[in-house]
Length: 480
Ligand SMILES: Cc1cc2nc3c(=O)[nH]c(=O)nc-3n(C[C@H](O)[C@H](O)[C@H](O)COP(=O)(O)O)c2cc1C
Image (tube, rainbow, N blue to C red):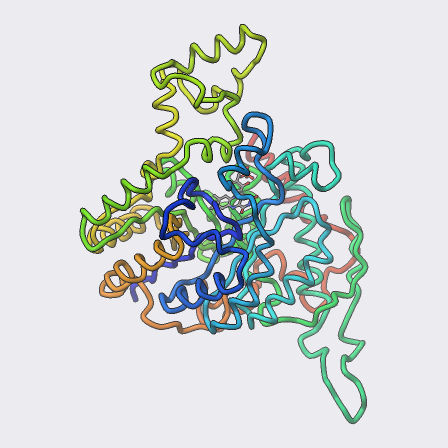
């Protein structure tokens, strides 16, 4: 049987997610993101286009690294203003039956108990169509929003995340039996107390008594997505993730990274095929090549270098203040002479011979990644098929330039062509998100997944995340 390629729409409850500057395009409706109707319309469109899911990114701070303040991010609408991603899901679920919803939530700043309930609520309201993109958050401003002076160190954030997930698995998988709720009117028993248990988690970061407040939802544990690219991030993905966003410079590196995550997962006793892999795709399609190129040219013209620089955390240099032919090297030297040391940050973005004009051009370029295709439907479908063949990827997050234009174009032009090739579904077959990824009947976590160890109340010994320490040292040993 030919494999269907999965497509998620890459979204965020904000104006400018990753295509900065395009909010000014007259056909772009991103400014309506505060309206429920915006999300309802998106959901209906995506379900008509047989998408896997809408994938909602999120950050919980602002990008204030560029020019030492949030002004550029604010002016350019770089992920601010932004709203909570979880709260638009029920509205979208109400007007769809199959579309799934993956939302980002950070493990670093809010303790796990409340999130466990929010996720269960969403899995109930969507009838098993909820997924969670686990992030540890990278913005220093986020730390300051949650009472910390600065960010927690990168690897420590993953340590917290590991325990966080353990708490959640205990609540989602172990706290309630499937038959705990009996709703017996005659005996006046709603829930059989013998089938619900406290988790009594005691670990280095969290102490959670339980029981979980929600009864078991269709999937119990939402489908876990993750996008870590560091050693710790990949080890985390291998242990927890069912869907992974893979990174890489080119198709070969993607293939290697996918193999590495699958290899690490196998070391943990998981089946490699129980991890689906995704990449972000930039697809500009039109009636024909010219139509697509025209779109690309318009987006290029409207892209905001300032917005991208703010998003990138700031080069430390105000590029717009210099002539286009000035060399970054000379600017950095002059800045250093004036006592402003931008060497470190500047070096992240430029080589010695980069000019200001080239740097500004480069930051707005959306056509450089390995998953860029612009053209007529047949060409785009060829490219997508080629990417999958070369890498083994399972699917893509479609990057938006215009809302709803990007998704509309994809549905009108690309979907029928992929369907003709047997690479895209022609109808939804499954009902829960996990079934969509792994086939009918696979609504719950696989037996080999770390989270399944708490089923039926097993391993709720209050020992915290002892198994995690073993996992961590295992990978640390391998890395050294
Ligand atoms: C496709 C994709 C989506 C991501 N979405 C978010 C997000 O919404 N919020 C966030 O804080 N980080 C997000 N990240 C960042 C990752 O969570 C992660 O921090 C990053 O890839 C670096 O990996 P590391 O944490 O292992 O260093 C995303 C990354 C990728 C590749």
